[in-house]
Amino acid sequence: MTVKRVILTPNPYRDRDFNTVRSAMKILQEAGVETRLCLPFEVDRSFNLPKDLRFQRLERELPNADMIVCFGGDGTILHMSKAATRAGLPILGVNIGTMGFMAELESSELQQLKRLATGDYAIDKRMMLDVAVHRERDILYHDISLNDVVVTKGAVARIVHLTVSCDGVQAMVCGGDGVIIATPTGSTAYNLSAGGPIVEPEAHNILITPICAHDMVSRCMVASDKRVVTLALTKNTRRNAFLSVDGGKSTRLNAGDTVTVQKSNLETKLIRLKDRSFYDVLNTKFRDGR
Image (cartoon, rainbow, N blue to C red):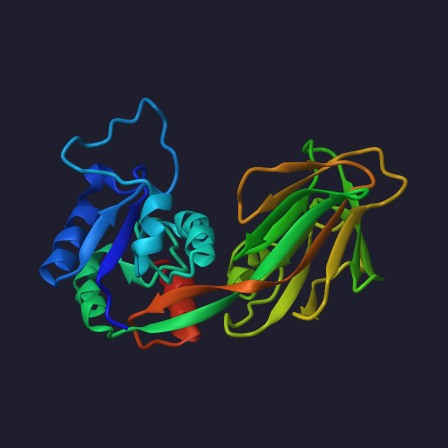
């Protein structure tokens, strides 16, 4: 599909003076693509935005756009993926961060954006997770996740005891720093740091990885995407835990709360401009660090 209108979402803390997004705007406009500039999140009031750039409200631009081009690190792309997915729009990441594992382009490769105007690109669909927090009969929290759902302890010196079930059958009782429930896309993030496996993004699995388990039997599990994973604080606990989705704000969990995680009906669409395998990306990012 040829692209006529693109939303550009720069991370103002990464793209100094918005130099990268300015270059992208020029390249796209010269190729005949309309651009709209939107901030991916609210910035501090003390942050001075350039007066020569006009920023639009993201929610107003989403219905009329063909795709989103996001400038920043993986965190910025994760943040924007939810809005893009709910609007049914594909997203292309331009790395201005460090690892930038989900980004398709580096800031030095902006000329490839011209290919969007002629439809010279592919779309990769990525599995997402649906996560909800239940307290008795109420749903306190509901969201979608591209990377991971993490339940962790509170104070540094404490241990959180969690029961993990799959389709209502107990799969693991874990005492430690917490548990990560990750998608294949999120397998190379916190999951990997905690000792979990690397899984190809095209796979459809749910990864369950304990964080610094204080026993010898808690190990990472790879579940089918058909499973409903439930996490709960063990009944005898007197401590709280905290839920974070894709590295976002924490939600406090009390004893008796349950977290359900399952495959979402939504999928994130990532734009692909390069003909490279997942293993090429692994070698480049982890071996060369770029």
